[in-house]
Image (cartoon, rainbow, N blue to C red; front, side, top):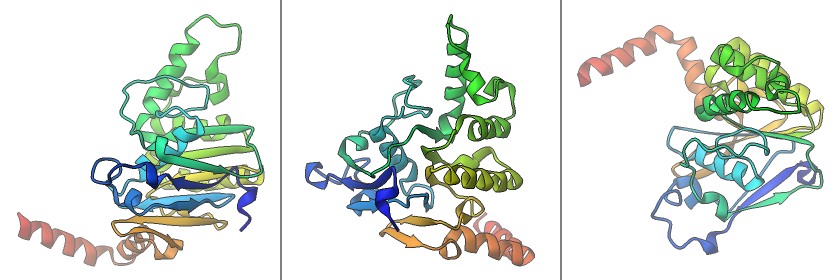
Length: 255
């Protein structure tokens, strides 16, 4: 794997500048075990259970690159509520030999704020075209949640870019997730690089990629088939009745 072909090839944690690891966000297991992390030049997945620090890590990478903490392109500077951590100050980016022409930080939890900001900016006097034209020409608020997500992936992502996506599957049906995989492939063919935090085994299936699983013991490299997401979903689909019975029995005993 040629890391120099990446836009972002590696991050390093400036551990010597951290005074203590007993306060947030440094008390997160992923940060306590983080030294360096190498990114695939095409697609890197960050996976793991809730609370492992995926979003915090993704946010720090995006902010270190220059993106707004709540998402969007590097031209967005809105702030609905300053809740991001200062982890980005302790992250060193190692850039590859390529320079991206495009980029986007997609954050599902604050996507509504991004859509609102676009509408507000478009309502202000301007000599340029409406920002929404770059998102398909229709207000993101005038579409379903899933449609507005997909409008960004299809229309705003232009190729030759670094795309950092935090749980992009949040509003996507399984069919749309498969369509998203196809879109990722199109953009990779256009010299794009993705870093994606996800719970979706469908989105994790891109073949030319690597998966980092965050656990309480640190960070491990896995195949799709080794992830809990894949194994649990496969087990549920193959043994639905048995698993439902077990889940309900456990719930009844706890009640």
